Length: 156
Length: 384
Ligand SMILES: [Zn+2]
Image (cartoon, rainbow over all chains, first blue to last red; front, top):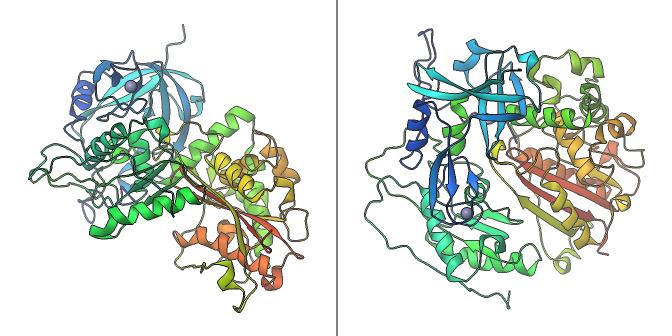
């Protein structure tokens, strides 16, 4: 697939003579709003299926294992491992350029679901597949939202 | 077409407005109800047809819907026939079942009508919501992560992956239409080109271009008195597993593995029977995983295999004789069609200065999104 510029056209206002290009804004839905609200409390909320016990992220209106509609929110423990990652040198949106190089990763939570996130509080060279990480909620001023970043787990 | 049946149906009560509900949720409700009405479970569904998802998921809508529903269909499609889309789905589903491409197809249409929530972005799908806030968008990051996983699991090296653009570029020296015709490269050139997203270098990433490609399909009977010897479709396989890489069932085996397996079985061929490969190559890692998934080397051994492989037209197994998209450039979706056109020309004996000696069997692959939506075809110069 081509490198689709899906974020390039999204809320990229402020381009031109203004020095700071705004990051693409947050897009939420009523169903997912509790996830973002709980993120602001520093919690990584995942959905738990009452009928089959399957746990999932991102939130949906059905369990992807059994299609039950009985889903409850639960806070993940905040520990997981790096499933894979990349160090971004040339980002997919110009607003992210000042932050390069930065590490984005798919983290597998100990509860099972996987999520896109950033690995922070370490140099990109330290990040490895399989590395243990812990939740590092980080307030994002532009998005006015706490993002659920991860950092290397304490080594003791 | 005869023999197809409709075994489940459900219509949600229409509402003037559906505040706070997304179209993904609406489609999930309707599809779930129809499958329950049939007395089936999600595990029974191996085909999915939907309508266009304007404003929410402009591209890759079947993959996005499959992912949302937790389905991994081996046949997925959009039917964009306006008010005729529903019935239009039914004969297509029947044709897919008759062709052996699916057993049970969910045909679903749905939309939210929320007069309050005006779309704030052309993309309002899960990737836009859950990936983009972290500075993650586009294809480069996804394929970089796939390459990273392959290296971590199997010890595949950057030098080994660099063999793909280098050997394909050698082939492109015989293709004057390639955007990089006449520009040979070395492994050192690849490794010294800028890192776009680790571990991917610029010369392992396809070059966007403008262009187009097309083929014409007709029956074998109709083909007998036309200009060219026909190229026969002997087998096909399709598999859709996810849209966002976070939702991929695995990283180092692609959905091409089951798609290729089905195409081989339908054509009654094995990997060793093929005379050449015309395989999708938006990134070096895709070729590496494809040669594993197509059975040319054990899983995880593509690195060493690529070191030894001869891609050229005089080899035992030429790969992408036109140079692949890494050499020709990628004219958006037509880039994938280019692999098909190349296979047709080779099988007809019309590949001019890069003709393989009398090939009879080819594997063609296509790949969409983040190793998400995959098609494999076995084509032959004869009908057998
Ligand atoms: Zn369930």
